[in-house]
Amino acid sequence: MSLVDQICIPPALPPYLKKVHDLKIIRGIPEDEEIIRIHAVIRMAEKVIDAPEVGNPMLLYRLTEHLFSVQMVKYRSRYLDAIFPESNTYTPPTLPTHISVSLGTITGTPSDEEIIKVQDAIRLYQQCSNIPSMFDPRVNMELSQHLFDLQIAKYTQRMKQNQPGPTPREVPNENSSILVESTAGSTEESNAATNNAGTAANITDFNSITVLDIGVQNAIEQSNRIAEQANLLIERSNQIAERSNQVAERSIQLVERLNLPSEQSNNLTELYERLNQNSERSNQHQERTNYFAEGLVQKIENIGDVLKNMNKVLAGIQHAIVRNHKGNKIDALDCLINDKGETPSVNEITQGTLGTLSRQPNFPNSVVAILIDGAWTGAHIANDHLGGLLWFYGIGDGLCENGGTQLKSGKASRARQRLSEYFSSCLG
Image (cartoon, rainbow, N blue to C red; front, side, top):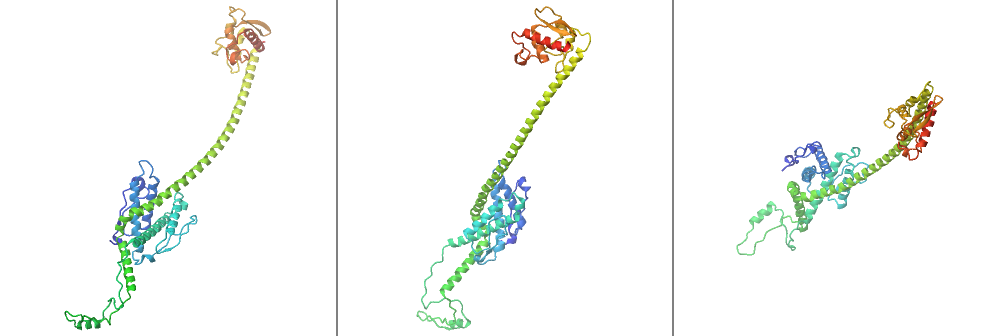
């Protein structure tokens, strides 16, 4: 089949790979852009190979098989006319400066070291595939094709070396010769010669025959066999590909697979470094946040203290206003607000007016002496209400349990004295 009639059919692609490139049937010699698209699709398929329900090893295998077929057609288009493959020249692409491997032109069969250098260059270059400014798909494609060409050249040489040698010939004596060419004159003389039946007089005149040395003849025959084998290899490349693609593809896939852990390791290292940087930045932000939070809490506490002082000042002003009112009676106690601006009648703890409580003389020893407008008067406040009033006006220090409304045992007399002093200071 001629190269013009060669057809390479890609496998069916899922939607996520079609978004990368929708691969088409390639007829004849493939264009560079067509091969670049195949490489791009393979790179994406390799990235998701381990993803559940997305990765498809069989599809990846078929894509690499398709790439092998396309690269074989490319190889045949370059080296089909070579009679002696040993004289082929393989030129690598020009690599960017950030790739440390230096590749040179290779003539004839490449050595193992030369192929390893190309593999190293491919591995280093594909590590830059995630950085667009450092990765050129065309250079990647040319590197891959260069490696493919070298591997086919190596494979061809190996196949020749493994073929059995020619059958040893009997060494001729000094009178033996090889008939290569007859002149018209020799033909006539041969035809004119008379050979009698049953006699040993069959003698041929070889005066006009060109005789070559047996060693030269063997060399020519061997060269012809090598040329025929090389041409047969190229002409039947599809058959060779079917038989050898398992070895070649596994080799290529192994190289690519070996590249993946390195790429993944580099990606993980880069990710780890970024996480460390983000963690350090987060710690710095956290320290700053804590610093500002501490300052904010301190400021809020200061504001709270200021507000408390303001409330006390406002309560004191209100008490002074009540005190300056002429004609105050015991009911004036109900006008005295606490630091929250509440009067005893509206608070759930005190529950009721002091004026009402003071008029209930049924509680023995419950009188609280209060100086109102320069005159002493008595207010009857039961023990049950003492703790609530002390808490309400914020004067229960040392007299109530845990700063609450429960009066400590034996503190009733002291509580009445403190209330007497407080109310007298407000209304006296």
